[in-house]
Amino acid sequence: MNTDTLRSTLEDVGLTQYEAKAYVAVLELGSASATEIADASDVPQARIYDVLRNLEGEGYVETYEQGSLHARARDPEDVVERLDAYAETVSTAGEELKDRWEEPKVENHRVSVIRPVSSVYDRAREHIADARNELEIAMTPDRFESFRADLAAALDRGVVVKVTLTGVETLPDIDLEGAVTEARHRRLPTPFLVLADRMSACFTPEETPHPSQEYGLLVNDYSLSRMFDWYFQTAFWEPWPLVYSVRDEQSPRTYTNIRECIRAILPEFEAGKGIFVTIYGQSRQDGSDREVTGQVVDITYTPGKGDGPALASFTDEAVLTLETPDGTVSVGGWGAMLEDIEAHRFVIEGIETT
Image (cartoon, rainbow, N blue to C red; front, side, top):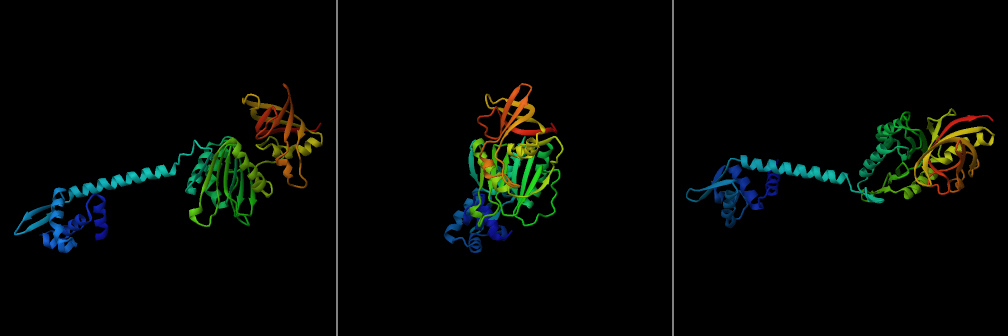
């Protein structure tokens, strides 16, 4: 440590600038007259006597008369203890600042804008860890690698994990198996987005022109999260090619989006085949959990032309009608208002030729 840094540290523990200079000079000289100490420390002669008496009062030096006022340093053990205590206090304060900075109090707000963006990624990991039904995610391949273990744990819990890999012309060799249910590739740059269980969204631009423009958006609201779902479905998911899926033509097949479920079964339904589906959701009447299994007897849906869905399919009605042992039940998706059940999960149990 150089002399200037030592002086600055002594000032941090309570010495004045002159006191710090004089004390360092005494340490270097060993024992010296007040005049010699003043010359060595650049403390004015008119101030050196008061400075040395203050240092003596604080236990840093002792003074004595030898024709004139002299001073010598005391055993620095007490000073070292003060510095150690100060260092411990600074370290503790640093940890406390870090904890408070990394845990912004946003839980009670429906929408929060936060910095730094690393806090958005931390909150995204929390939402992924808490997810129970569905995750909709847009991120770069590099970001996927950093989240892979979190996504694999969610998939192991039975969560449907849908990931769009973005921002690269050609996908690198990336291990998707065991971490996602389905994945798509969007060549264009895309903001980072994690939408969990139709409730919690974490959003931040993947790149900004300057660090001062970085921000993250946290949403904890059912209705507002629907906008992020539409954004994900129309901009990040449906228009882009599927690159991985655990689904095949065998049953059971699980969906969390009613429109995806309908598109999967519509050709067989129109061909007159019997389709049996189990629905998991909530009653629109009283909000209670519902699990219903039945045969699809009617579908209300606006199909698109070609491979992709029409824009109207995201806004028009999408309804399944099931014949169950307890009667006919109408089923809608996210935000269902008129149907009997708002479904969170659709499991195609089997398809039979009739």
